[in-house]
Image 1: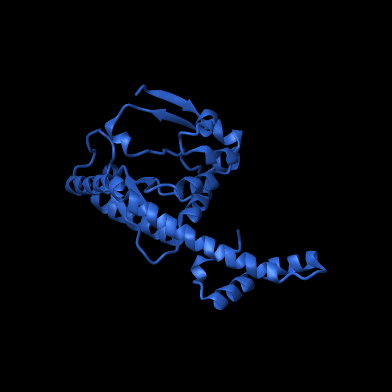
Image 2: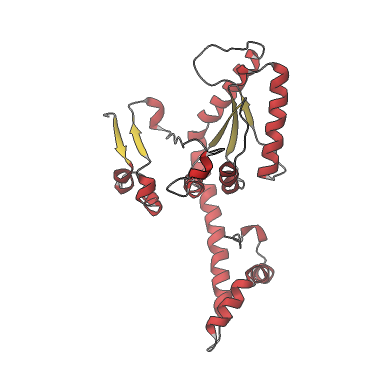
Length: 253
């Protein structure tokens, strides 16, 4: 297969590729994405998505021409694994990073990479790792501890050789995790199908419940009242039909 670069607008228009849903983000986003097709054996079973770096500091004021967190959410719903990279000497969790993590916090396929860990000593690395876990715990707000791979993931020699055995084991764990993705792809698709089925069931019950609340008159005022008390309506539907509250959508969105 010939190697080529496909611009974003052509990529979203190609019916043979799973990116047509990106059209909803508009030309401003499609102008910033492209697809590289390479003749590589590993790419026969896996597709790699490389997102731009998260803005921090003064750059956040400039912003982007598209909704970056929503784009990340779109890809996250279709990915088998999400890797968030932090540099050992730069652990800033910016406002944009917080918004990105907000759309990822319910995903069970997120892993974290603490990169460039060879640039600090063992003692400094211990402090950096603790600070990273503390920062992530505040943003993700989940009881489970995220898996963090520690190392220096490039082809250059390590600058600090104290932790080479640790870096090698972590690299192997990460590679094993990535190698397992094609094998577990079918299971993930089944899981996604079951999840969407549950959401569809809840959606149908909600629509039926809300429709029954309307009478012949004052529909506009009734609609406004229901919108203001949507959380209470969700609780009513959940109690009537024995549906788990976790299957209901977020009322704030």
